Length: 149
Image (cartoon, rainbow, N blue to C red):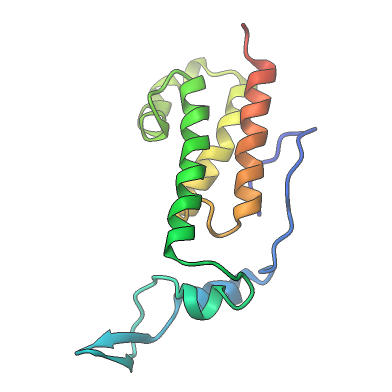
């Protein structure tokens, strides 16, 4: 975790990978790859996570289908927030935020930060799913509570 958190909102901070440096290396620095039909140890890495070896030991059921489904759910929440700001979806909001920033209220920046945190994370919430989901739900709730009808 590490995003700006809105005072009074609830966040799920439980995360097994408190040593992020080790967690990054375990998942992303896999030095085995398929070459010429066989798995070989190599001196380089491809930065793609090894879900089967590193994730599923502690998180049964984690596979590409789960990741894709979860990322779709987070994208849905990000799109829900973006449409509240008048954008068509979160990529549209990200692209146009700078041009709108001068007229944005502080509470709007606070609500939008969760989405920008997850965009910057690069995993669409997979690095810490419960926290990502709680960030987006809190941002949407906060936006709704502060928006003028």
